[in-house]
Amino acid sequence: MKPRRTSCTDSGSESSEVDSQSPEKYESAMRRRMAANARERKRMQGLNTAFDRLRKVVPQWGQDKKLSKYETLQMALSYIMALNRILTDTKKHNAAHGQWVDLQFDCVQPDNYQYLMRYDSTGQDYINSSFSYQFEGDQLNI
DNA sequence: TAGGCCATCTGGTCCT
DNA sequence: AGGACCAGATGGCCTA
Image (cartoon, rainbow, N blue to C red; front, side, top):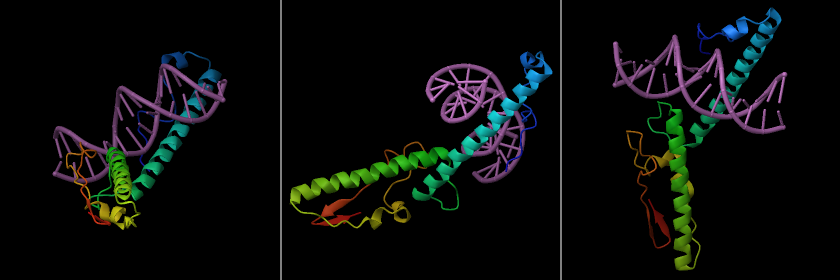
C-alpha cells in the first residue's frame, strides 16, 4: 500500500472555521472527515478492482507492461466496436447468401486480437484503428 | 530530471 | 445528517 501523504493525513480538515469551533465539534468534524476519507479510499479501490478485471478481458500489447486506466478504457471501447462490427457484417453476409455461417470466434479472443487491430503508439486513436477481414464463400478471413 | 501515472486528501454537490 | 460521487490539488514512484 502506498504511504500516506504527510500534508494530507487522516487528521482531517484544518480550516480556520473548524478550528474556531468547540473541541466537541472539532472532534466530530475530524471523525466525519476521517470516515469520508476511508470511504473514498474504499470506493477508489473498488474502481481499481473493476479496472483490473477489465484489463484481463481486453487485448493487451507489450504483455509485460500494464495498460493505464485511460488505455484500458480506450482499448475496451475499440474491442467492443470491433466485435460489434464482426457481428454486423456477419449478419449482412448471411442475409446475402441465405444461410448461416458457422463462425469460429477464436480469432477474436484476446490472445489473438493483437493481430487484428493496428495499435496507434501515440495512444490517441484506438477507435480509428483499422480492423481488416473479408468473407470468402462461407469463410471469414482475418 | 521531466513527464506520466497513480493514490490519497479534500471540499462541493446531489441524493436518500 | 450522512453517504456516494466527482474533480482539483498534491506528492510519490517509475521510466526514458
